[in-house]
Length: 131
Image 1 (cartoon, one colour):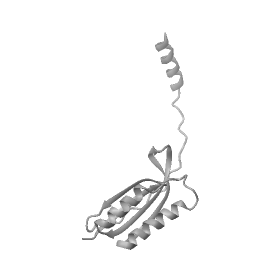
Image 2 (cartoon, one colour):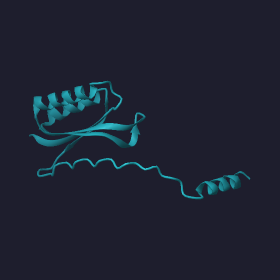
Image 3 (cartoon, one colour):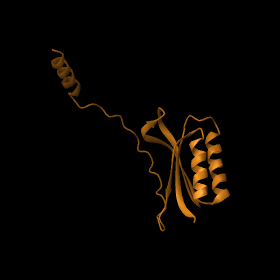
Image 4 (tube, helix red, strand yellow):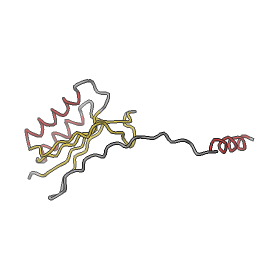
């Protein structure tokens, strides 16, 4: 029985030129061979909540597709052994699930300045601990 799935992938930003397109092409080919692509979204380079393999950013891609369990097993196996894929997750959607939200644009990061007097308090505390 075919179900509808979301496949979210985080690709290595340091991969050689053309590697991302090769991975995405392989996923498209695998899905087309045993199912149907419903949607494809490129969410671009995003900062991750935690580093993976010492990489603070990753290229996010979302595929929505329909397929069966055999297709899921093929995609799972393929992505586990593919160089350039940092993480991936396949999620089964419930019938009538809304489409995925568009990613929020990154807000400009502002440099936070330390609070006034915080360096003096730290120095005084370190001196007191040392004595």
